[in-house]
Image (tube, rainbow, N blue to C red; front, side, top):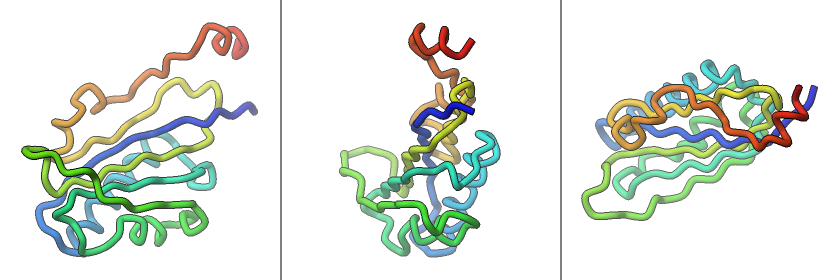
Length: 138
């Protein structure tokens, strides 16, 4: 089987800055991401989590690391740049994963209030591949 490195994005929000609220939101987002993309965690190369400046109760990577097979994934937590008026209590992720080259749908989970960030990505996105790749896959 041929594989391609692809990026998957996601975002969610929490109601409060607590370990429990952040754990629930991150778990929900990663569950959706794995299920809808049929993603095996061993395919994940790296994950970058960003959080808004109002979230500091726990690192999202610490939550992800407890998931089966996520303990060996390279992860990084960073604080997102603050922009006045932007969505508060928001957690985003950028995952790089090796997916089957013929997988043309990627689900980018934008959940809770984060749905407003990318309403166009609240459903599966068809990956646009160069003609050379499309020809190669036939």
